[in-house]
Length: 436
Image 1 (cartoon, rainbow, N blue to C red):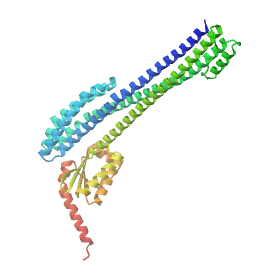
Image 2: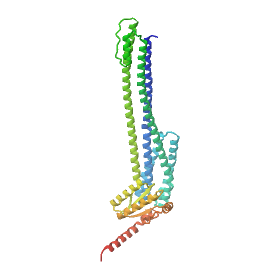
Image 3: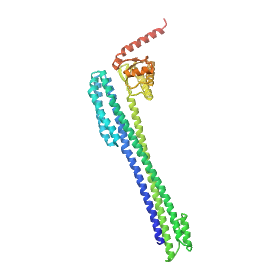
Image 4: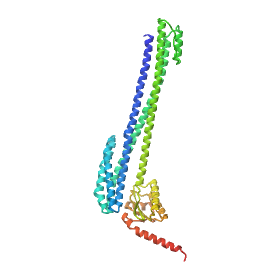
């Protein structure tokens, strides 16, 4: 095999190696882009729709409480219209979310929601609304409690779907990052192999040229050191001339290959920068989505502590769900500001929707009562169920400073007596302070 053929084979091998590694890099970058597209088209929209679904179901529950607290038919009609609109919206969301389902676990959670939601609507329409329209508060409250398990199961299933979608989004992001790392590693491998191949070609040329061809050896030594800007000035068509011309042709080919490699390297670096920027944009969108979800959660917490005026000087605050430290602080702040703004003299706190009252919750209620008393307002606690009363007694919490009534109706009826007694007590204290 002649020297020319050997040099040609070495050159072609180098080009083939560069091409193979380039294909591998392209496949890895394509895989990373597919994972990014999966996050953009599945994880982000599905999380947004799940958050909207959770907010609307919580709003539907709050509308039930507002309907039961309504004192005139016009308000009830408006609340019922809004409930019907919410029902349609939730049903439409459940129908469209099917396209985001991935796997049997998510399908099971969605089926649970689709089964429980019609049951919740049926209980509301057949039991709760008829009793609430006729002011049968005890029966309406009983129907409201009976539907609580369906509501809890729906919200738990939504929480599971949100957690599963977060896991899927994180997995896709990790895979995209892994694919990008593989592409960068492949790029480094291309540079290393190209360098090694260049050195090998130089060694082959050196071994093929005899000691009598000093100028060719000198040029080959320069090539071995990486200096490709060489030319062997040999004339003639003899064997030495042919060898020199082949050597010069090989140098030209190496120069062209090096230029192509540098160009290809620059192109790859630009593509990596673009893909990295796309990933950063995607992560920014994910962060914005999480921020929006946190804002929605804050809105839900704010909606879960509504304050409803029942008289010119009296307010009702129905509580739903567990009271943690953050929510208790928000409740007290909102309540104090509303009492000050509306000059209320009495506040009814309805704990019917609170599933558990522990020591921290009881202390929060006592603190709120003390602060309201400093503002000149009396506090009435209603909606204590037997199991809550047993829990409070077993904890040793003293609620004797609170005015306690059985339900919201009894609390509203006791306002006149409580406020009259409060005015009388203030009059006595005032007369005791006036000198005779």
